[in-house]
Length: 405
Image 1 (cartoon, rainbow, N blue to C red):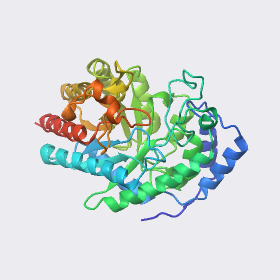
Image 2: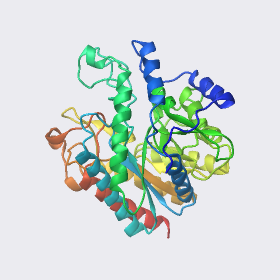
Image 3: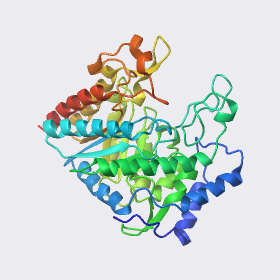
Image 4: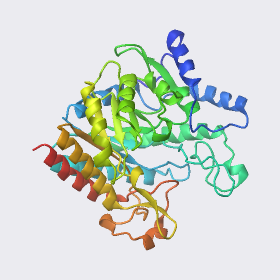
């Protein structure tokens, strides 16, 4: 396993990186002291990578099998990691839940499962508003500021990127100790570009020299940062890591084709994962023309369903939540679309924890809206608890099995 710093980008590759990062970048914090932020990025760049390039290459090979319909992708974990919540017990609980979900899928669906945790870097979050109702800067994840509702705590602090990197390294250590029979990979949203740019190394093993991130095996671009003329897509074009793109109901088929064209110019199976997050009421109508247009382009992408983000609502008692029935219905609709079109449903992407939380209503735990305050612990969005996650895995396994008949 190679974990050394590697060769830093220079020449044309460095110039392309600089050009990408000069494009408009959505959802970035405004650092009060830009010079301090640059110093932090420089310090991060001198640190050892968190993940090894050969691990990332191994994941790329496994995702190629997913794209061919020979395996299934299970991706899940916390909505947002926090400095206080990243205890070894919590991390092991999340990994154990993913392992149990994977085992359920393997047992019933009869396919190998590629397991990718939302872990070891998921410390930054996009927000719909930059300022909250109280006039405070929005909480953007522990990598940027604190959830504590005071002006000082909400002021972006670049030193938090160093804490996030240290926490991610510890989490990666837990992951490596946890898995025995099969690899568990880590992923996060490539949101905060000052953080992402700091750990890039040249990877010349592919069809052209690209950059490999030392911060995660799998990176995804979120719904709020997928602008085709923006920095995030341009940055992702340069990476050799497998890349996901979250696509919501406003995505057009033409946009989806362009994401794939830009991110997968050499048509490498599994290089790009399109993560549909449509909402249960929209998936059956909006997803089909996207799948048809991308399939007609000849690209071999992974189709993955995020049934969480399109199904969030505010409960009567004021809690952001999700109904497990809607989550299951979106996944069912996702499978129906692919069965009708003759394409492959490749995986699911869920926010789930091993902790016994009460954040999503319904499911195996029969949580009601009145139960939500009991153990509502998320830093941002509601997660399935372990029982809900395992029951969901059994339901998905049935859908996978049916899709193969």
